[in-house]
Each structure stands twice: as structure tokens, then as C-alpha cells.
Amino acid sequence: MAQVTGFIQKSKEPTVPAAAALLDGFNQELTKRTPDKSRLRSIWDGIEKVLPSISTMKGVVDKIVPLFT
Image (cartoon, rainbow, N blue to C red; front, side, top):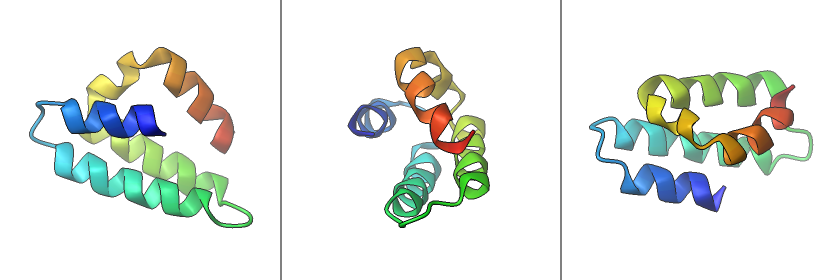
């Protein structure tokens, strides 16, 4: 997740604050004993909508997707 955080922080897109807030929610959900996969998926979809360039992080995205599938 550190790579995702770094990517968001370095982004020049105006939606960075929204993406950062969504990532905080994603990380909070991950800390739960049993994370809600549908909530993780919904949050990640939101991150992709407000920061479409995140999809260019193929290696990282490939590791994140299994968390909610």
C-alpha cells in the first residue's frame, strides 16, 4: 500500500485529496479482522474513478484486486 500512497501523493491530478481519503478508508477496512470484500471493491472502484491514472500501476493493482475477489 505504500506504493499506492506514494503514487497518490506524487500525482498532479486535482482529485488527489479524494483519492487519499478513499485510500484511508480502504486501509481502515483492511485492518478489520474480517474485511468486507464488497466494501473494499467499492472503495477501490472509487479510487479508480477519481484517479484513473492509478490503473497504470499494474504490478500493484494486480496485488490489490485479490483482496476483494
